[in-house]
Length: 148
Image 1 (cartoon, one colour):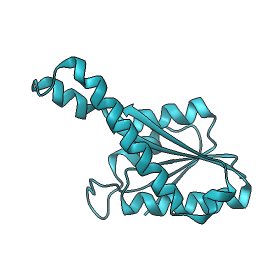
Image 2: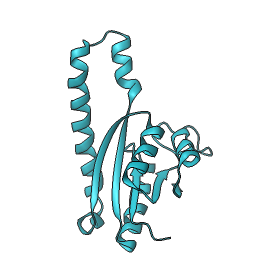
Image 3: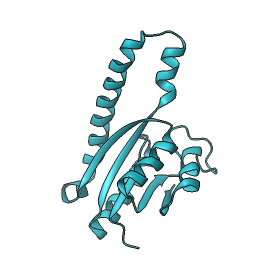
């Protein structure tokens, strides 16, 4: 297998950093493009609205701010790895349910390998695969490399 497009979802955890590192090594070896994706969970904005914490007109402003902050964090994450200077790296942010957005991005971009951390910031437990990774593994039409 020689991947040409690698998708790496990240939640900015140390686990995701390991997945990102492995993806960059593979991308350099195969001269593949790397798509780094962060999904802002839809529940965050739904919660604001449910509790009347902001006016609906301000939700769009909050969404824009969250996207901008996430993009800056993603770029900083990618810049930690020297391989990024030699690769085509695309930074993306999405809103929604993480596993659904990851699978959607994989399909839309013609991804042929997803490299994802088996655990994320929520941790779940040391010996269980996280729910996002598990749902991506179950739903993906391309190979998925789980990193621990």
